[in-house]
Image (cartoon, rainbow, N blue to C red; front, side, top):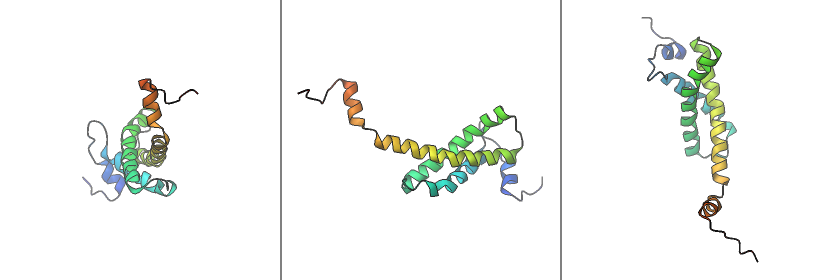
Length: 120
């Protein structure tokens, strides 16, 4: 077996776990690192959490993209995993914003049937 000389060659030789490739996780995480600059509202912990979730999204989304598109060349799939990671961090940042801006107390009170308005 020839020595891997590039990241893509090393990742191509990696064995997938449960059908999912760890290398797509790595490329998705690298893609999310690139997009850290465009998510200044996130703190460091949120950025790391976003990086992990973007890597996971790339790991699970790349085989689906491969199935839909029919592309079998690993270099294209690793590029797609990187792009999924770039947009995955944006999606994660939006989810954090929604969670932060949601008024959870009002939602819980409305579900429990407690009305805080006096009605006068």
